[in-house]
Length: 247
Ligand SMILES: Nc1ncnc2c1ncn2[C@@H]1O[C@H](COP(=O)(O)OP(=O)(O)OP(=O)(O)O)[C@@H](O)[C@H]1O
Image (cartoon, rainbow, N blue to C red; front, top):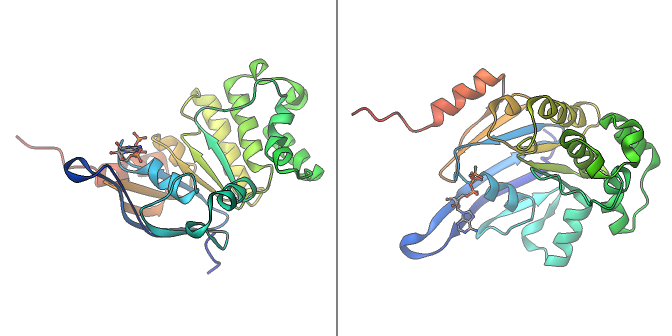
């Protein structure tokens, strides 16, 4: 078995203290393999964002360890953690977070520009071709549709050829057609470009694009298996939800 690209072990995180304390993560251990698209689902408040933020080095867990691409991030100081995030991790959020004064292509290159790194021209061309913007690569975000803006955000996340891309509700702001384009793009980034993606979503249809489905509940993983189709995802969510109260 190849070494996982992300390994999390014994992650726990509690917000607040005393009677009002909330356990957002309760001793979670999970590995993410390279070359896979994983969907993380679960009810509101089940700990999805907290898990993603802790494994992506955006937040620190109270206990446990996280290793990304062979580097244990738990021990890194803030400066090295920032560098690792910049160089080895791609992020896609629900809000596209593009800089309005830059063109699409400049936005894609921004993380490399900030890092003082030269883009790999072949990779850049492949990305721009993949997101299918054509001449619009020189347009500003305000001149692009929401779906096009998110395609730019996906290309930006992939620009540094990261070890892993974390996507938090990447289709939350999009209509169904644009959503499918973004999900197809994330799928292609895995199948065609050899990338690894971990995606938080509320949408069973979005999760059906994944290879693997994790379901969280009360800060614990209650299901881990192949994603299957949207009906299978619905069924896994039903199985892991609270039983309907019978009065
Ligand atoms: N900064 C915070 N301060 C206090 N409690 C928090 C904080 N962030 C999250 N929580 C709590 O931790 C628990 C897990 O939150 P988290 O945002 O990880 O859940 P989620 O599954 O991503 O929810 P959603 O689907 O609504 O985004 C929730 O009970 C939430 O209220």
